[in-house]
Length: 166
Image (cartoon, rainbow, N blue to C red; front, side, top):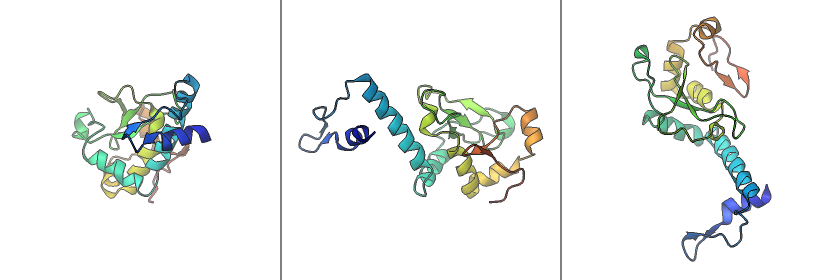
């Protein structure tokens, strides 16, 4: 892991303003895979930090992750959600905070879901006042969510309480 972190942090050559491969053994497939795992883990953790959450919320406001396709959601912007935090298990999906459904993102099919994981979208839905209002406006409880096959929001693997007010 230390070698991967050093490669990610110090592979930029300031003299030539280019990426340098001289100090890195990034041609090795296992090293490249380790770089990817480390980068996704760092990205996911950064997105959960105090400066990271507003940045993802800004991307949500811009509609970067697409819009909900359901008519009653009135084109609500989607939040990024990776069904699994493990690299290689799932692709990045869009989660509607209004209807709680997961959607395949148009044009972002190759992004691994581990870069955001399952917690980021739910944390933003609870901490951002605008998104929280949308999230709470259509919250009918767990029985309704299961009947619609909606994604059940979880934070660090724990289901949200039925009527939580954070």
